[in-house]
Image 1: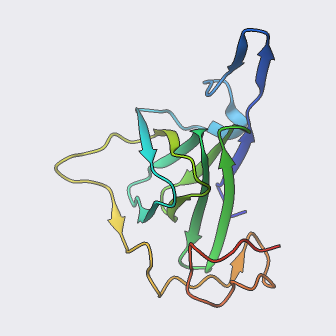
Image 2: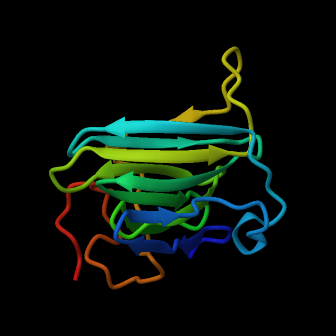
Amino acid sequence: MLKGIIIKPLERFNDERGSFTELMRQDWKNILKEDRFVQANFSISYPRIIRAWHRHLKGQTDYFIVLKGALKICAYNQETKELNETISTGQNPQIVRVPGHYWHGFQVIGNETAFLLYFTTKLYDYKNPDEERRPWNDRTLIPESINGKKDDPRVSKSWNWNYPPYK
């Protein structure tokens, strides 16, 4: 994992009425560290939509929780050329912590609309946004390792969100 990326599985409690899941707690220091949330956002994305790439250079950290559907969430370290790829679904909820200095984005996988709840540690500044962007299909984004593996067939090639899953 890239330094600072943390994945925390969430526990879902089921009974005859349905289910209950704690999504975020202030005392979860193993994932929050010293972070404090200042904004919560909700995004709906249609099947196969790609929302990438962007990064935050003023210290923002994002916490992603997929509520419905499935996302491929990626973070890329431009200096080390490492890429982390995580599959997150509403059926198996987890928090994905992404330090904002990494290029990051996601793709909806499967045929279901995805609901994403995410928390940020900085307020969005409408007049001076903390976002640097590059195209989702930027041919210069070439990972030298993916999830710590150098033998992944996607290594040393321009990142292709639509490449078939690696097994």
